[in-house]
Image 1 (cartoon, helix red, strand yellow):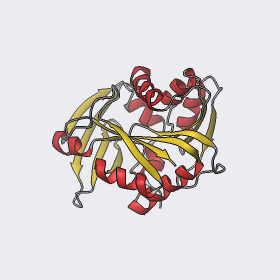
Image 2 (cartoon, helix red, strand yellow; image 1 turned 90 degrees about the vertical axis):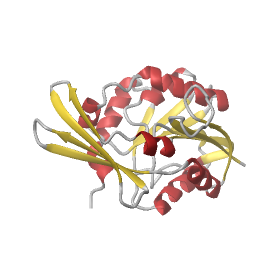
Image 3 (cartoon, one colour; image 1 turned 90 degrees about the horizontal axis):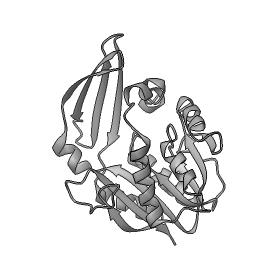
Image 4 (tube, rainbow, N blue to C red; image 1 turned 60 degrees about the horizontal axis):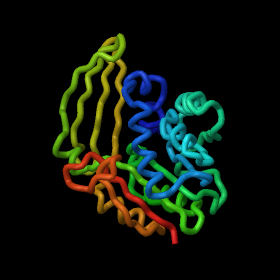
Amino acid sequence: MTEWFEQWFGEEYLRLYPHRDDADAGDAIALVDRVAPLRGRAVLDLACGPGRHAAQLQTRGARVVGLDLSFPLLIRARRRTGNLVAMVRADMRHLPFRPLSFDVIVNLFTSFGYFADDEQHQVVLRDAVALLRHGGTFVLDYFNATAVRRQLVPREDRVVGSQRVVIERRIAPDERHVLKEMHILDDGRSFVERVRLFSRDDLVQLMQRAGLTVGQQFGDYAGGPPTEAAPRAILVGVKA
């Protein structure tokens, strides 16, 4: 059975989210560089998408590898980084790297929480931590589930380029996922995003079970505090 993220993250995704820019990615990587200096480090951008963050990592002197499941997004990432960053197509549940290969791993902009059960999420983190060298850093950037619940916009109408799009959002009946349906009115196609509503405490527990000591936590890319109203849950874990 094809999972939703195997269908969604392609050219249509890029057309419907044109506003995601390099400045936003630059702020995120500046924060990463604060907590884990990047120059000369081997860094894995886990679920790198179209390469916004990989390009910023590259400019800060990191030796970057990007991994993503989406072939169209990897093509865009390769172009964005001038073909100077290694790009690997793989499912993050089956990481094709040797243990102890990286100094830093980043998983940014809620590129996690997509799987059918929590055990798969735990396996991803466990296997990713195995790739870190001792003393290495894992940075997980997730949405703040509390803020998502409080600020959910049930319906939104947009015109993106020449396309009319209706976006519908709701909390799933299990109260554990947020669902977003994208309806392209001009051609009748629809896409669904289904993301786990992990709380900050949930994420800390997942990271600790994977072998990380979670220290610094932030609520935004400026390094603000992790309050209930903050937009992000950014957690920094270190491997012993």
